[in-house]
Image 1: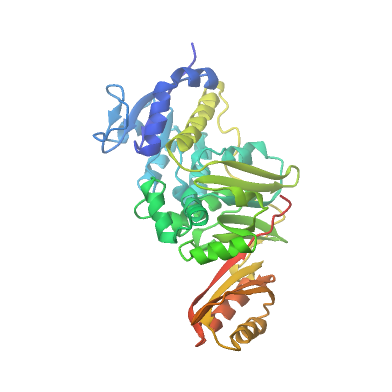
Image 2: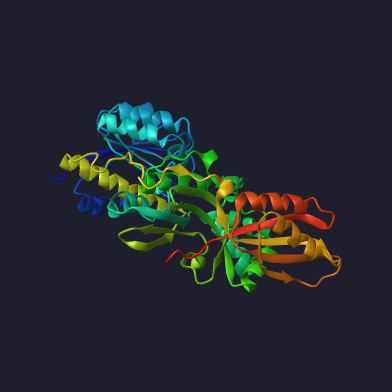
Length: 434
């Protein structure tokens, strides 16, 4: 008979319900593929009154997490409540009790991942977290195991489905930002308070995890340059399209010399760029390694089933480790890349910029803008001006410029009397051998 592995689930929300349902309804398939009998022994939540579309077996539901954390028969604890506390305390207690842990908690791992990894190593137990990045895309396993022999110089991805959906709706349906966000909420792709997604916090948490795995470098959230998508207008979508670009929400970690850039922001991509065709709630992560070259991993980044699929893959991996006595097969703690010495300061990052100014329609305005940019060492590649009465939009593409120089130039221009609104600046990203 296959060995029985008991699972305790903390958190019975959208993803937790998907995990519980699959453990109950797919038990034979999982047993055949995992080589163990996976039993959902306990599910902890504060609200079991809301319907999840199926019923838990009698005696499985509990309201006290201690009934999972202190149960000696439970080998795997799955944490799906999110946030920092009490999730961190639950995971630490599980690890100290010698239990293996599976989590999808990107915010916690971005803040305290190394601490929890060290605790798992000390206790000789597994801590798996595939569902923390990319939904159903197995990018964590790919970086930890599949590409283990590679030195990476770039990990660039669309890792927030909500932001990608909003920008896709703006492009395909001509919606304003607020109209597109309303659509995302209506379809369940965005929370009522969508600031974690729209302002780039969620993507920054995921980027910190990817950076640690790919480069072995822990990155604090205040070290990641972060911009959201709320300032992107329908005008920017249209002007970018006319110039052969699309706007995508990117999380970027890439090596430049002996420095590593880490940033999250909306980005102009040429329409030929592979990431340019990733639309809706889909995610995609591009990696470049010295042995495999360029690879792109694509799939659903949001929703109950993709996330639950990733959690179940982790449960199966841990179960196989338990059955075969091969726990902690792949070390959690990563050695820092010897080629990278420091994080690049955001002001030193260089890129080409899309610039949009709303200015008075008077002679000499373009010359004044060009003069300010020139004084800050920024040269102009192209200029587009739409004829309108009163205030007119002026769109420019710059050559490569330093972030610090661009910020200073735009501050000077925004203070000028001929500007109606603050300038919009969006970086571009080259294909990098895609």
